[in-house]
Length: 246
Ligand SMILES: Nc1ncnc2c1ncn2[C@@H]1O[C@H](COP(=O)(O)OP(=O)(O)OP(=O)(O)O)[C@@H](O)[C@H]1O
Ligand SMILES: [Mg+2]
Image (tube, rainbow, N blue to C red; front, side):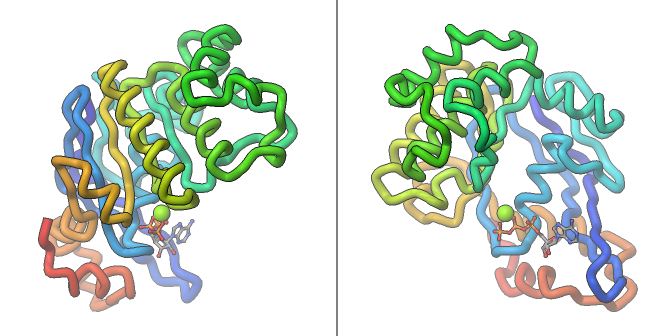
């Protein structure tokens, strides 16, 4: 379903040096598989999800998604592929503040293969317990409710792959548990694969497969010529300290 090979991404630091953030030799998800990704702050987890989703362009390497090559596409092509196959739950929700709850979900759907289906959007919002808040604006909702809108928007197109970046990070324990259960349940129902980033041990413990991003990207970095420059950015030090346990 998802296959990542030799994927790299570097950024230019404020001092002008190039710092390699992501260097993943191989990572794969089967259809319907659910995997949790943990890792130090700043280690590159969000960058990795952005590369998979095609929000960012990779420097090199491959992301294959359900038979299509994300990394072969330009920005417009990546946007289209993402809209068709991926549901993304952003850590900070990224709701459109000027639009109602229902409009946020309908607009999200309008770029996808099913188009703007208001009836389905209402169903999904009812499913996340917001059937009575369709005409509210994001600022009129609690944080947990805003996160549920973000979850509804990500799931409304029945994506093949759901990427969730610390989806419970801004929520209290109860809302967090509910949001997580909902994401996992809907993914199971739709046969969608789930890649979820979290640093919450309670969240991580629920996943059979847990990966450490430091370990995932470290092998690639050791093999990378970029390390031969002697530059040792702080992100790499953090990862080295963890000793690469997966
Ligand atoms: N556009 C950018 N330009 C320069 N550096 C960037 C850019 N985006 C991210 N970085 C750097 O890449 C590193 C990884 O960032 P990223 O957001 O992927 O980390 P993360 O693992 O998701 O962290 P957190 O757990 O805190 O969310 C950081 O050191 C960050 O400063
Ligand atoms: Mg992040």
